[in-house]
Length: 192
Image (cartoon, rainbow, N blue to C red; front, side):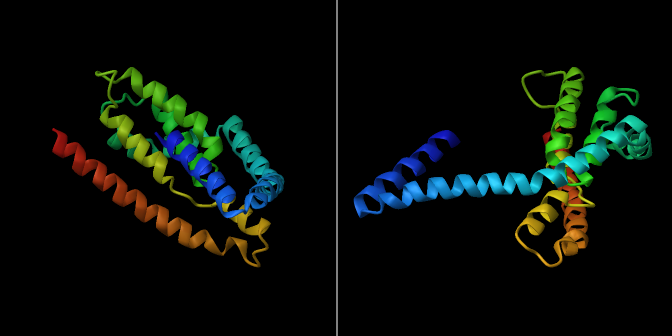
């Protein structure tokens, strides 16, 4: 459905530019936005590569596994129907750890692996289980300690204090996590 909406917006914009005689703006914007996109990628890439490297080192050194053990008591309460020795808990913990560094792109493969593992314990394969929904809530909220992508964007746009958002990011994502998990718990109880 979203594809149709985007297609409609693009076609309507092009038609409008021809009707109003501003068709040259479309060409200019296509060229300018392409350049802007490439510039943004080149500015963000070093920061994302650095943090992805740090996360890879943390994973290979076992730091992510230690973090998983640290938060496994909390996760085992959130995911009661999943055995503690399941790989799903490790993937979920790793996904949370990577999201804490603001690297949603690096967290995505871990999230997909976690969902695949959670599907193994799902009784109704055609619907998301309660555990899958809870994980989706956690993943979407993504408690962030260091919002690296946002800091990179602020730096690339000339911010004089790009990291001033760290405290507000921590607070807002922590509050969002609590609120999201409370809503998840409420709807889970309501379904049963």
